[in-house]
Length: 493
Image 1 (spheres, rainbow, N blue to C red):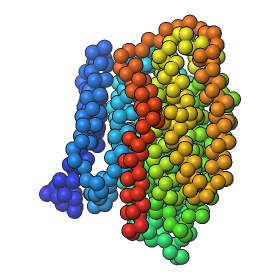
Image 2 (cartoon, rainbow, N blue to C red):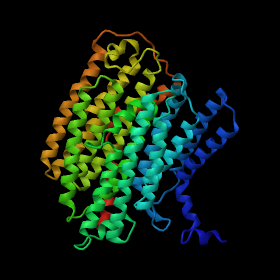
Image 3 (cartoon, rainbow, N blue to C red):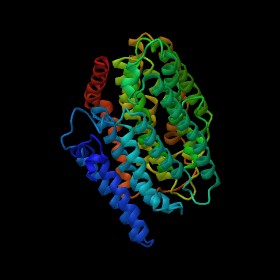
Image 4 (tube, one colour):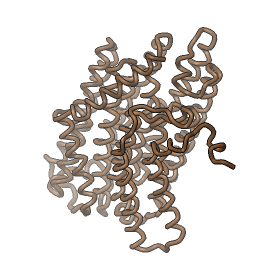
């Protein structure tokens, strides 16, 4: 049978647009095959690390092959555009920075599994497809691929009951998210007879309003569970705390970007009929998340759990500006979700290095005098904490300023005030950590043992945190074009 008949109206040359995704997918299968034929050894461990890094490096280079500014391929089920390209570049780069920690951290914790490499690549492949589609079926399958990988990665700690418990909670709540996404897709299809979000949102009329609104709400709830929005956040602190810390950083950075992209794509299509419902629902969820996330982080004594609640609060910051349904709001949301990937991953990777010391337990009291044990890590950690708080000249300050501006421009002042209050609450625990690190005597004596690749990852993220804060236009110019283009396309429908 002719392969063209199997592919329907698809032209084979369209696969050339998927070179980055193909490289990641092929890399995962190469590692899977090697795992089946090679015996466990130190050489095999090193080989898996370098093969993974090779394929991700080739993937990054493939983005420099001329890509179309905008093109629907595979019968409009997959979209190549600048938002998807930006997201995929960030996801691949962040994964590349995490890979060195998989090797050394898992060996130190006596919980090394070769599966961590190819499961991470399969999850990354799901993130890339999730970032490049308006089609409900592709979104659903991609969401499942990312989620299943995260469930497995969360439970990889050998002999750890909390790790298995965290993975189980993630599985149960994640399953609920998938069900809501499926029901939402069913209602939206019933309203429009289409699987394309652009067509669905453009089909609004008085006869299908109930179905379309119900479907949109269920679709929104599905993704709010994935990004840890209050009151659907209960799984996140347990899963993030119980997972191996490099995995936590991977989920909180690349994973968060991928889960936010469908909401970013949906926002320009929220028309005047749905705007009030969208603004109230999204705004209330965001306000609750910002306050609860920071308030609960304030009382934590475990550093990793504190950063997990901080991640919840930052999801609220990003979601808040999505309520504005404006080009400026979309710019701020895209900017913030990308830069959180940098500063959030950096904070978790610092913890990954500290946890490799035998007497480190992630307790806040242990961070006292950390500067006297390791100047480099303390300075880097302080940079990431100040960025998460939003102190200039870090990239976090630019992100929060843009969120505030996006809310103010649409006169959503009540949510902007909540943002200020939430940031004030977060000052209590971010500043406390910095004060303990630099102004208190050391509680314990140890010397973190980070290799060259681990130090390179942390340094790269620390430099980006400061550099993008001092030169925000480097990232802002591209993001402005993305937002304006998405709204222009939406208005043409």
